[in-house]
Image (cartoon, rainbow, N blue to C red):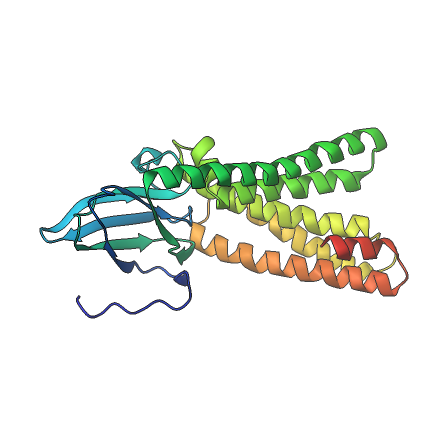
Length: 282
C-alpha cells in the first residue's frame, strides 16, 4: 500500500457517511525522554478504530476501541476513543488507523503525554459540566413553570431540552461512558432517540409559542407533519438499521429548523412581537 495514502483535505479528515473502511497513517518522531503517549481520537461515536504501531520490527502494539466495542478497551476511562502508544525512541514511528463507522467518518487525532492528557480532560470536564449544567437547570426551571402555570408550552420546551441533552451527551461520548458501558447498542440508539425527540418537541413548541393555530393553519399542518414524522422515527429507531435512520435524522432536523425559522419570520411580519424573542433565541 506504500504511496497510496493521500494528504487529507482540511484540518480534520472527514469522509462523511460511508460504508467503507478508511485507513489513516501518521508519522511521529519521539525521544527517549517521553516513552509513552496517549493517542486520542476526538470523535467518540466511531464504531471501531483499530491501531497498529509500525516500527522497525513491523506491525505491533495492536489495539481496538470504539463505541460498538467494550468501554474497557480504552487505555483511559474517558469519553473519547484513546490508546496508549509506546513508540521506539529517536526514530520515526508510523501509527496506522483503520476506522469503521455507521455515522460520519471523521478522525480528529491528537497525541498527548499522559500528564498533559490529564490536564486536558480536567479542563474539558469543567467546561462540559457547566454546559450540561445550564441545560439541566433550564429543564428543571421550565418543569416547575409547567406545574405551577399549567401551560403546555413549558412542557414542550422541557421535552425539547431533554431530547437535546440526551443527543449532545451521546454525541460527546458521555452516555456510553457513564450510562451504557455494557450496552453499545443502547448508546447508539440514544443518539437517534435524543435527536429525533428534540426535533419532534421543537416543532410542537414552535407551533405553541408562536400561536400559529389560529393564524396560519397551513404552517401548523407542516409543523405537525414534521413533528409526527420524528415521533414515528423515534419509535422505529429501536428496530431499524442505524445508518439510514441517522440520515433521516439529519433530513428531518434540517426541515424542522427551517420550518421554525420560517414560521417565526411570518409571525413577526404579522405583528406577533414574541416572534422576535424566538428568533433571537434561535
